Image (tube, rainbow, N blue to C red; front, side, top):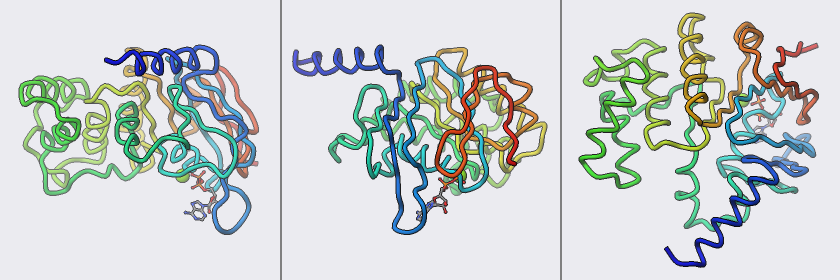
Length: 248
Ligand code: ADP
Ligand code: MG
């Protein structure tokens, strides 16, 4: 590795020490029409945290997640993830940046014509893992999410809870530093919702920073994690061991 890239890495590590693994500095995001989706949001999330983001539909939660992924860029202010100023990333560096992030969504987003094993292996192929590593890593992560016996099933042969576990395995197989989950239990029954949340907690205990957008009041109240509540594009509360804040 060149000393120049070593220096950049050290600078990012130092930035993370001082400002957090995720740092939004007075971030506003406006779409073409309407009030800003995020309006002057400042937020720090440290390495190793487990954070819930709650709030009414339309309060800006998904916009926040998309800014972290660099699916969107801020209208003003700065978004830093792992010491990268995300808006300033060059296009050619975005794929490399995203390797640090695992993502799951409410609607699973699996490849419908591929089986469970292939859905997870695909994520490893994108980052050019060797065949040998793929053969080791995919079974290991499928066992972690409790799908060891389901390699050959296609998504439509699985329950919603199983499909979300495949999506979680796919998000985790490349060992991201941060897992972002946007309403991961939105399509699941209470039993499966709990299983997914327990997996997220376990992943966090193994060192991954986890950010979960959710409407699941019961789970948020039971888990006693940090809870950030949003309303109309601003953070209205941010509590350690918090509870679900009422949507007036
Ligand atoms: P949440 O995830 O909390 O439901 P969103 O971040 O999706 O909220 O949306 C925040 C606000 O931004 C809403 O008013 C929504 O209508 C608006 N919005 C979201 N995406 C777009 C878009 N692509 N174009 C225009 N407005 C959008
Ligand atoms: Mg949303």
